[in-house]
Length: 135
Image (cartoon, rainbow, N blue to C red; front, side, top):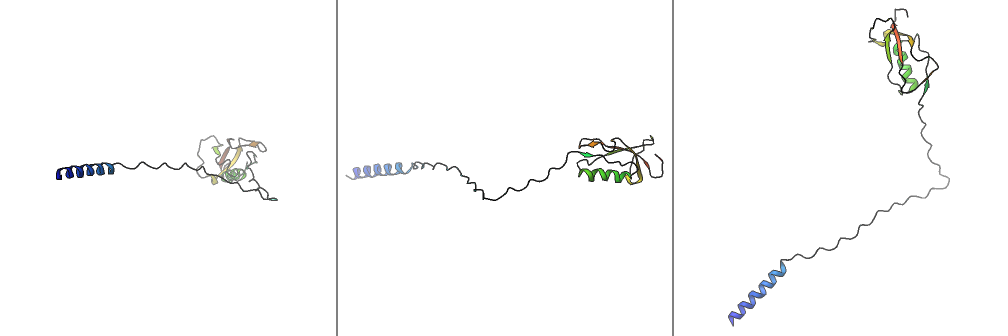
């Protein structure tokens, strides 16, 4: 009988251990809930904010002949609110000198006539001489 008791105890132990080795089945995840967006109702009498003013895309070329070269360049930048930030210049004497200090040069001619339309793609060039030279 002891032998039968040992066998029964061993069988019971095996069944218990075998049942403990299995993990429980995972619970099903809840279905995701899509987010909802609620738009506020417009308030009667409320007005939309005014749109920001649109910057102009063209301007009228001023007459800058006789002006200091630096002042002429600054005038274009101010007129266009830096829509045209860069202008070029050349030595109007034909000597090919670089205009290193623009304040020491005077505008003799401009490639865009006064009154003509200029845009951000306009290439504006000034012909200049040193302040003590004639055009």
